[in-house]
Length: 157
Image 1: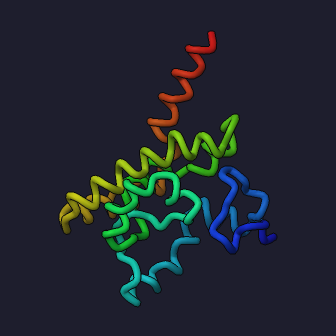
Image 2: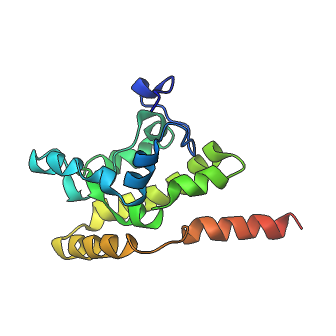
């Protein structure tokens, strides 16, 4: 594994998986890389369900929307994590991964995060946990991203 320039400042290059080892790719594919975050849950720093933490670079893009989201304790899983479970693949295939993340993925994630911040409940959390387990066994890309790709393909014809 290599440390990328700017990583310590919360910067990341969307779609860049060059820093992943073979074992790391397996852990990410099975979502076992999320397991250490249960320690954060036990310490009370995170909850099982809630908006995913984001790097400063992307919080700065939509600060007004993040004010709502940051009022809620971050979590290990949420509807956005389920929808974009293959985010790295989506970004790796994108013509412009940064623009794809900034203009398509991040606004959709924020939609999920804001809805969760306004309507979270124990019943809703249980549903999200069950959906998360089901998503571990499903393949496929985000519906929002696939619709975007299809609309771009037809507009380029």
